[in-house]
Length: 103
Image (cartoon, rainbow, N blue to C red; front, side, top):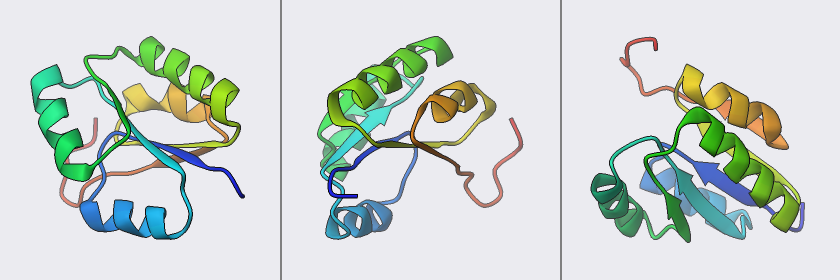
């Protein structure tokens, strides 16, 4: 792909660095988490855009908007609440931290 957008909920700095080096143009954070906490995390990861305190249906709308604006979108999600948005993305990737409890 020549043009890629990745929407992330939870990712490591190393993974984001690798995505950037592989040519991912834009990285966005979509989260249901607290806005202030999400802003601190997004700033530390140098993400292009942040949308916080989202309900699952808000994430779906956000992914739909990103697809319309950018074409291909990969959505990484860490829980069942992310499944609808991952299904709307070009490529959905479930992700779970090691040792995390099932949601």
